[in-house]
Image (tube, rainbow over all chains, first blue to last red; front, side):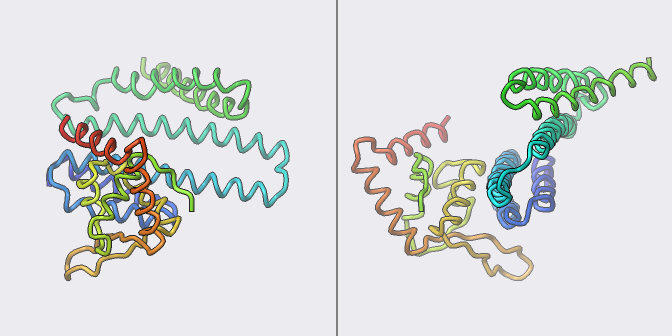
Amino acid sequence: MGTPRNLAARLLRAIVRMAPEESREWALAMLRELDFIDGEWAALFWAIGSVAAIVRHAACHWRRWMKHETKEDGKMNEKGKKALGVGIGLFSSLMLVGCAFAILRIAGALFPGLDIDHLEWTHILTVIVIPEAIFVTAAVLLWRKRGPVAAGILTTALVVALHVVAHLTLHW
Amino acid sequence: MRLRLSPQTLLVLDAFLVRADEWKYGYDLSRATGLKSGTLYPILMRMAERELLETQWEAGEPGRPPRHMYRFTPDGLRFARTSVSAATSGGLGQVALGRILSGLIGSG
């Protein structure tokens, strides 16, 4: 089994483990199809598409559940809404940093010759500069209509920035 | 039982209509329609949620993991026949358009 197919299998197995109950059967179905796909890269693209499909499916269920819960409870109080907004902002921005890091690791595994894992500038660009730029842009765009979400995103941006400052202070 | 009839959905319905009584696999459907897994599976999931599709795990040979299979429910079959014939006879010709687009994507 080549590296791309191996990565695809690992990715789908991880999704099967992490997927919520209602999406797990579908994730498993996509994993089982992997053995029948011709071509290493086709298998990897299949896995990436499958992950996107599972994330969308889980997000739809979560949204529906949230709507239902909100209806059931009547009106969620203001504090609860704000806390939820901050939570969504924190979660989505942390997911973005996690995805950036995962992309870097996958690129390192796929192209070992480039030695991406050991180049510091690739880490700085992928995990810090690009996500920070996205966070600031998203926070500015969301500030008026979704203030708590923007606050959550800015909190992550601040934590990442503080992490960089601490790293620079300690190592340089 | 509302399902958004995008050209991709029509392609999937069309693929299911070929020997509609037979169970079909995800990857075979992907090849037949030219759709990637990220497009195909959300359509299958929506169809299954609306009970247009029934799903089943194949009782595979020993030592081989089972595969997930899909087939129209009677409601699904009716819905697909109506939708596909309406789309092909309609001015838009969405299925034909979808096939052309899929062919272009496949060859490109």
